[in-house]
Every structure is written in structure tokens, then in C-alpha cells.
Amino acid sequence: MIPRHPGSPAEAAIPPTGAAPDSARVGVAAASPRREVTIAGPGADAGRDLRRSHDAAPGVGAAAAPSGPVLRLCDIGFEAAAALLARYGLALHRVADGAPIPGSYWGEPEAGVIGATVHVRADTPVHSLLHEACHLIVLPAERRALVHTDASDSDAEEDATCYLQILLADRLPGVGRDRLMADMDAWGYSFRLGSTRAWFERDADDARHWLSVRGLAAPLDPAKAP
Image 1 (spheres, rainbow, N blue to C red):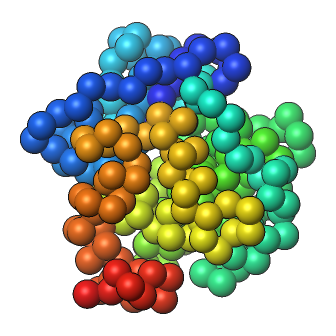
Image 2 (image 1 turned 90 degrees about the vertical axis):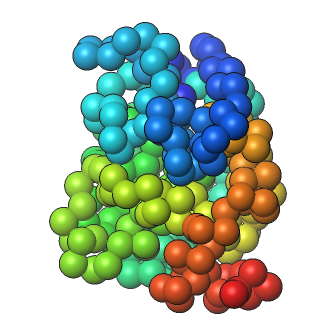
């Protein structure tokens, strides 16, 4: 779901994939706004565009290569993020600098999920923390308890997760939806309409409806409630 490239985020940037006219997302069978991945590693063809939940193996590839700086947990503080997740019955666990992150699908510095716990480091991007947390939030409790590393392979849940993480960004001081959407673009989320904002504002009706019928969207964005 996230652009991958051998080496650290500082070493290279992954250019966005070209637009596809017949889907909400650019990528393989992209009917949803999944984050794309360009990976090079065992069992993968270098430069092949894949979607995380359906097509890529966990742990393949190195850390993402953003095209610009993104907010990280150390920029906003642990307490605010932990308090936000606690409202949804989730725990936020901070691991030591440089340590492996349990349940991280792509590996450090990205957030990991095991059960109702989101695992992070100080250098974990805020968008990654929110994305993985939202994967858990959209799941019913009985499924949430079984999660380890990969939370979902559902297009509808992935769409809802992307939408919800943008809404929740408004609940984190110093973040907000505008900065989060910019960070998502910088990290490599790729949408048919060309940007995260375009998808969120003009192409995300299904995701918004999915969240609304489950009571997850209206409390955060009442103006968009059906």
C-alpha cells in the first residue's frame, strides 16, 4: 500500500503512478483508495505496483521513501495520540528508538497492529499511526481481537480506513486534515483524481456512507452526514 524502495526514506523518492480512468485508485485492480506499493525484494518484481492486503508479502521491501517531510509521533507527542486511540478502545504502545515494531506490516518506522494495540516508535509517521488505528476502529470487536500485522483485505474497509484517518487527524493538536492529506501525498498514497484531497472531497461517497451507517463518521464530520 505504501511506496517502497530499497534504502532509507532519505535516499529516494517514489514518483506517483499515472492516473487510471476507470477506478478510484491507481494500481492493480484498484477499485479502492488503497495505498500503492512499489517493492523490490524476495519474491517480488522490482517496480511492480501492488496493493498491500491482497498482493504483497509482509515485511518485503524497506522503509517508505517520502517526497517530503512528514509529521512523526515525536512531533506531536505520545499522550495526545494515546488519548485519541483510547476513545476507541485501543492502546498505543511505544517501543524504544531503533527497536523492531511489533505487528508492523512494512517494518520500521511504520506502525504495527496486534489485537487492540497499535505499536509505534518516536519516528513513526502520524499518518501511519492513524491508518493502522483506523483499520482496527472499523473492525467489529470479535475480528479486532484476532488481528496481527494485516488488519483487513476488504476494499470497503480500506476505503473507510483512509477516510477515517483524515477525520481523526482533526482531533490531534498540530495535525489536522490538511496536513495529514499533504503527508499522505508525500508518502505516496495515490488516487485516481490525483491527490488525497481530491479523493476525500469528490470521490469518497462510498467510504463516507460505510462509516456513517456504522456511526463512525457523523460525530467527527457532522456536515457530511447523510
